[in-house]
Image (cartoon, rainbow, N blue to C red; front, top):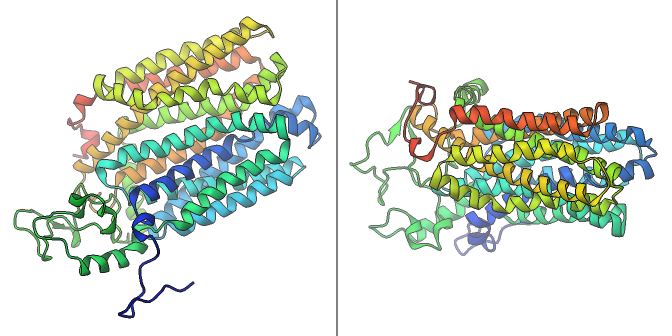
Length: 510
């Protein structure tokens, strides 16, 4: 479809350009994309213990093995897709097309899983879903990082991470109810509807790279009045203008009060109001010259390593419960798929407290709030081993302990992720040359994405093997020990809010 021509012969702006290129619209598409990733991952949780036996003819004694393999296939391919999509995001200015293509791939994989009967076809479908998820997640976060401004990035990234968490926790609840009431196929029709909704949003959005030609023309026709330093001073039109180099005045000349506005190879240096990934950023000359130095610098920081380890353990715990909890309640309590799905409400509801945990960490410090989360989650997970019999008291105990465990897991992950953001910003300030035309936050979130993929592999393998090879009590005991292990680096390296301004040698690169 060709663009309409304006009176001067140039292509006219697309319909609803201001809305489709706005931060809130692009942010919504990204949040729904991360939600879709989590939804795809855990949609099968309450269904597999029943469908593998009824549809695929798997022996009941081998059900846990195949559940583990299906989760491992997803996680390993997500881990593979993350660096691939990271390269696409780094070396290409296009964001919308890879994201759209990955969502189409997710639809194909979901259809394959929906109609497949043999276990190997189910594994192939899950591998394709994982590859799609890796591309969607990293590309979506890159799109978000170059769309929003620095002062907004933390809140938007928090929403993006909440999207995958909510999707992971909500999907089993919905899938269990739908499977029990309507059958197998409606579960995946619901999944296809979620992907289709995000496809519509991604197809409709106009990223800043594509929108800049129309936005720049609009700015030429409607110059910013003197005395305004940015379009944001008039609120609603903030999404219509591309970022401007720091120190550039209204007439295009560099202001005298800005020192070193241009550094290095002549690339303009942007202020904190500019998107963290500029639309016209310099292209890296070599792969090793642009990817490895930033990643290595980030991984040299104990604060970031501590945050990544906490993310890894948090995801391992979520994936482990996804892998073994439905099978456990089916065996122990003889529950249906609906009841197996509803048990996940105990861990889903506490995720609504994330804003509260963030506010508490801002007020009382990130490390104390995170340690409270570990102190709550570790014994709650360990005491789940006491649940052994199909009676009311054990059922109530299981639900209460899962609520406490979910509350603790959300309590420690929120301040830890926040601390990582401050650590990255401190590293950026200490390495201005390395980060002059890139952002450590994008690299850090790519590392988090890879951490998720690794946890998606490790969690089901560890928990599934322990549950089948030993018993429920030992499995949750090991999970409790893993949870406790993440508290140690948090004690040593996570900072309280008043310490953010202090720089250490590992963060400054000095």
